[in-house]
Structure formats: structure tokens, C-alpha cells
Image (tube, rainbow, N blue to C red; front, side, top):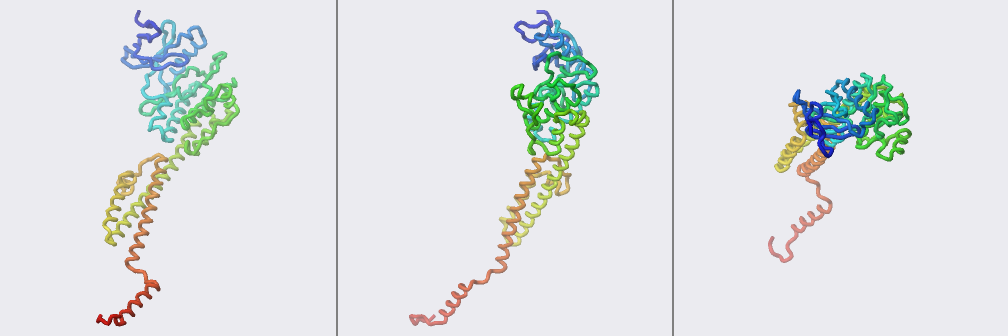
Length: 411
């Protein structure tokens, strides 16, 4: 077998062009992706080789080359970088940066991706990458979770402009439904003109998936799905899935009519920025309320401890001291902010709400304990007057004390 030739049995090639193949890392509708080494530059790369099934399809071959040409024009941190283009035994290939991280769907399962604020950050990165592509005259037309990758460090990359179209070009894939049904804009299955607003809709569909774990219209059979895309409204997002300002942004972006959506990704980016600022403001108010309740709880514990000391109840004093220490350990950022040693630290809204609820419950318990101890102190200082029945018993005892004993013995 010659260097660069395919190994028998359909196994991976040893080399493709000047690139030494290490392993296969993926396979899509149009090609197989390998991890490889550029031995001239000693650089790790990804090589996408066109599938043999498409060798006799000039339109698909052209689309593959178009992916390389288009993506190569788009230099942006949120778009995968294309280094090279070539031909291997009659099959075209492109060479891209090798990404290290997770697909978007996998990344969303990580703990650091659970916060709504983290998801909004990813959404804004998608918009920034698409905005750059649109400025270059490129419409992606096939945005979906599998075409997005999150690197270590949280930088999102948009992949696979293989079905993208230069807005100035008339080249189309004849007879081919371009796009992925679950995420395509309504105008795509209708065969209408596709522009930046179509990517706005598809991006919003991906954002819907990021928040809910499902596409806006599920994975029903193709005809029902297309009918839903054209005629139905996605199930509304809940408060638990997204704050109200973000829900408004996505509702607009998922409008059936392109003229009712954000008109470009820059506008969508601005709307997301406003939604994030609103979310931050609401979250900060919850965090501040939790901090105030922390201070009030500590103050109540101090009052409880002082009252216990005045009553000579060391066991209650010790319990109050331990409660203070537990709160300081559980809420260290509140403890530092309360004593002025540090600024109030950021916190996601769900955690802030939980903190507020816990502290509210603890504060109420302290107020109840203080009230009970005060009643105990008042009772000790001012014994209750005897009841009439008690006075009658005392009088009878007094009278009996005046009478001689029945047996005549001296008292």
C-alpha cells in the first residue's frame, strides 16, 4: 500500500495530502473528519474528507468546496478556522483547526452550563459569529446543535458552512432540501428567499433547545414537523426555563414572518444583551435581599445570645454561637460582605433564591425563639397572681392552723 492510500477494508487512510492521520473523530452527511498532524508546521488539525458516495454528484462536490472557500473567508473567534483545501485520490478535503471540548449538546450537560446566564453568553457568541458571516455575505442555512462546538474555556465555534450560500451567488442544491427540519426557518421548506433573518430564526430554535433540551417542534415525522414549523407556535417557555425578558426575545426571533423577527443577528445580539442586563438586575436584587436577611439573622442570633446570658442559660448561648458559625460557613460570601471585608460576590439566581428562602426560615425561627425566651424571662421576673381557688386553699390552711388538734396534743 502506498503512502496516502486507503487501507483495505475501508479503514482510515494513513495520510491525506501532507497530513498524517491520527484517528477518525466524526462523520457527517458529506464527509468523514479525522484528527491529523500537519508535519510541516507540527500542528494538530482536523481533516474533513468527502465521502465516496458523493463522488459522482457534482452539486454535492461543489457544495463541499464551497464550504472551504466560504469558511476560509470568515476569520472570527466564533467560527471554525479553515487552513487548507486539497484533493486526495479524487476526493476533496478541507483542513480546519482541531477543536478540544464538547459538542453543544454535550456541553449543556456540564455543571458550568446549567446557569441561564451561561446559556445567554453562548447565545451571544452564536450571534457574534453569525453577524461576522452575514457581513461577509454568507448565510449559514443549517444552524443546529450538532453544528456548534464549545471549546475548553467556553468559546463557542460555529461549524459546517457546507450548505451556506453566498448572498450574491445563484448556486443552489437542485432538488435538495437545504437545512435540518427541526431548526429551519418557515421560509426554507417553502422555497422562499433565505437571508439573515432565516439564520435569526434557526439560531433562536437552537437557543430554545439550549433552554429546554428539545427543539421547538420536537422530533415528529417530517411532514407533521414541517406543518408545525409553518403553522404552529412552539410550546411557551416557562419561568423555570428562562426569565421573562429572554422569553420575549426568543418569541420575536421565532416569528413565522421574517419581517416580524429581529432583522439581523446584530439586533438579536442587542436584545440578548438587554435581556441579560435585566436578568442580572433581577438576580442582584434577590442576592441583596438574601444578604439583608443574612444580616438580620445574625443580629437576631446576637440578641438571642444576649438574652440567654442575662437569664443564665449558657447552653442557649453556646447554641447561638454554633448557629452563627454554621451560617458563616454556609454563606461565606455573605459573611465577608456583611463585615465589610469583601464585596458581594455574583451568584446565579436559582442559588440566590434558595439562599433567601433558607435565611428567611432561619430568621423566622430565631424571632420565635427570642419571643419564647422573653416570655420565660417575664414569667421569672413577675410570677403570675394566684387564682381564686388557690387563695381559698391558702385560707383554709391558715384557719386549720389556728384550730387545736383533734387529738388534743400540743402543736
